[in-house]
Image (cartoon, rainbow, N blue to C red):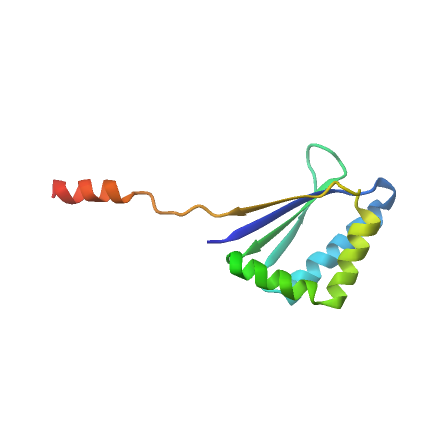
Length: 118
């Protein structure tokens, strides 16, 4: 099952341009160097300075592996350090993790009832 990590954060208004530039670098770096896909989401409604990062992984184990690799990568740590310490409002980050829902529709009880009808 796929895993989605959804992180929202507020960009400092006085650092808006720098934050957007750095966010684009982080997206590009992660998509090129790691085995997951990242999108940066911009607001259409709501608070104008609240942005989001959406990362998709193949599963929980893959998420853990990729996170370990990222936090062992000095170049990546430099990118996120600049981004979070200089461009994001402290305490504004919220992280949620979701997984995809199983596509199986019928449960075992329904399957048993169908078998009896035949």
